[in-house]
Length: 376
Image 1 (spheres, rainbow, N blue to C red):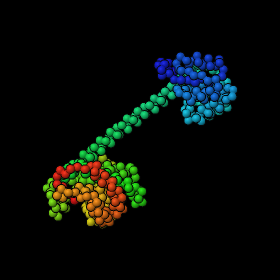
Image 2 (cartoon, rainbow, N blue to C red):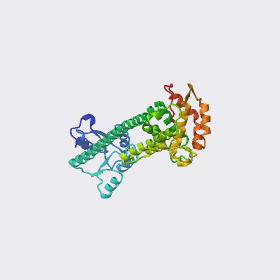
Image 3 (cartoon, rainbow, N blue to C red):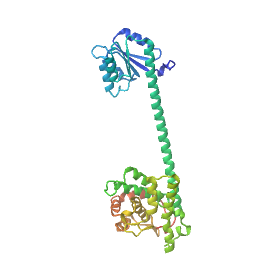
């Protein structure tokens, strides 16, 4: 028995008996080490058990008027509020069938009267020590869970920051801005959400995958780190040979992600999306894109979404003598690519949410700081 517990943390025992002598005996046994409450009827016991502070243990007589101990126990165990309070029967009903009934009703112990004080004290201490151990385990589990959640959140933030930093390496070499990354990943999320219930896309575009697409989208041009500056930063149109070399940024991007997968020894949807987007976001619905000329549904859904996002942002950000294409003109140009450059259903989804794309542009707008190079 826990004999050195501070009074403020002492456990509470509810003694339920209608005989004053029994109450006095039990109170004398436990009052030094536990808090005590008394109930002289089953109904009163139910009321006390449901009130704060709730008892840690109930010592319950069987033979009481109006409501016996068996019925009291049944009601305690049928109430979600009191179902977990351990019950020990202390009773003169000492037949095997009585004990069996009491245990079947949910009691943790059944002690026959006349009681042996030492036995009762030991059994009560065992149950209350078990309660303390269970509570300690629950508290420890909650602490560990909160610790894991906190570290998971921090790791997630670190991973997101690392992804953006990696993406920025490719974009920075191309005179692109960090806002391009933010815009395109938001475009992808908006498009994916718009297509969630579409029969062609609903199996792929669940909430979890949409979040992974959002996180992987910034890596679409990571392969540009492998393109020479003389090509990447060239002003004006690229020569055919230069353009062939520029196309290799898709291959470099895929190889970068594959290296991560090989090094880690595993893959997941995030890495799959990153690899698909980096490699295939310049493919076109009619098969005229690069690097492999995929046609229609051969192009991964992730890359088809990215194609719309990337082209829209290139058009809306394009500068000519200091003037930007207005959004209406950009939408008209995008519409012309339906069924040729873009998956028709994805382009239709874009047209339905074009106002949300424009809101993203306004949110992540920046002044012109340099003349864009020939990127596409």
